[in-house]
Image (cartoon, rainbow, N blue to C red; front, side, top):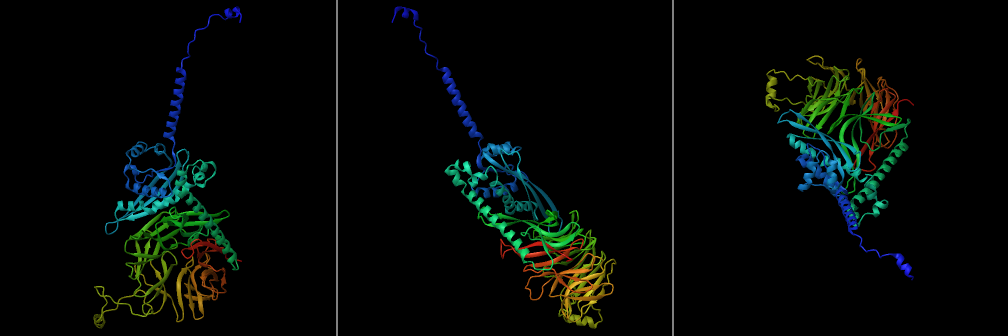
Length: 633
């Protein structure tokens, strides 16, 4: 190397090591940032299977509401049985979060690591019945339940109804909160939860969601996963069974007129009557429910009610009229469908006489824990209602008429005999069929002042000239009586006395009150009988078998009824006869039970109940859905 080269390089620069502080600071920032991110992530990440249940039921459970606590405990147990983790009380930190965030439960759910919130509110209505023995409190609940993921903008909403009652108001509320209400809510919420778009892929094992789960999470989900599969299979099988059942019904029909079926084949509807709004049924909504604990399919029944249904091109239009805990037997309804009358069962504690208007507003004319009411029949315009009243289970029934305000208009004992039915001709005249005690094989008892039958004293009183008790229905055989209840003193008029070899049952009047129809028989066999009220003449129309439930067409020219044709099995069919007499037409022919016909409001079709065994619950449940057939060919 040349000297010039060395000289050209100049002096060697002084060496100073570079500071490591910026690198350390940067590394610290990265570590702190990463740690903070992980800490933030740990604090904000929710457990995908953790649920907060907080339903406002007279307050929240964490605020001390006993009904809410009982309801939520039951729902939590259902969810835990499927492997979900639920937020429970007992931890002061949990209670503090809930109390501090009571106004924002989604925020509370996030802080408690819950991914789902089951919330909403139970609206409670109390009805106090001022009756003997301290009164009775009826409680009605309308629950608006919401299921929401913490990141959802809009919750899934469900409406559930339930009723309860007890003498003590607080006990009535706690009975409402007990298992049945919680099961109803669970039956709606649990399927919605397992079908939620954020959860369903995990439970069904779809794609990356399943692969990303660890063994512990997979084991935790086994029960929920098995439930989802069992539920899907059970509901699919049930739907196919009902579809096949409906098709089989159509194929089985061999009658002269086509039959239409309305609604689904899973219903249990009782046909009450018809009107401008369609046909009125007594029903309870049925929902197929797969029990999370047993994976067995069950039926979940809602409150009973009266519902108007009207067929159209899109299916069946439904308009609920009234709901309640339980309806005894079949309600009555006016010919135009304007007023219905029914007997409510108030949770086994009391029975009611209830009138319901077209708008659904109802009035309880009587509420009693001991009396038993039946066969409620409103007058043509709903100004009065007739019914049977028994003071106890073994007591004889009394015929009672109340006006629409509950004021008594008429009452008659059966006098040791038997009432066989009645029908209104108009708002003031009632036709009553009565069989005297002598016809039933005995003399009516004569009671003394202590309520016990007289023995020797009765003969002595008669010998002394005391008059026998006055009887309203003073007949010697089954008699059709006309009662005009406009006067304070009612004197029955005999319209028809049943002859030897004749028998009558069921009593139905035409809309104009000019005729009354009966099912019965005479010397020639089973028949439909039609009484001309003014002429007091009975016409017997021979039928191909025993009959029940006759009903007039709107114009009074025809009578429909159920009939059991001889030699065609034990199932009833729908028959049609001219009211003036003539040939009977059997409109249906199938191996099912068709009964309780009612003409449509325009008289063009006959609606009826079509009954059979539920294909999904054979020998355990009858189904009864509504069908119709044309009157004219």
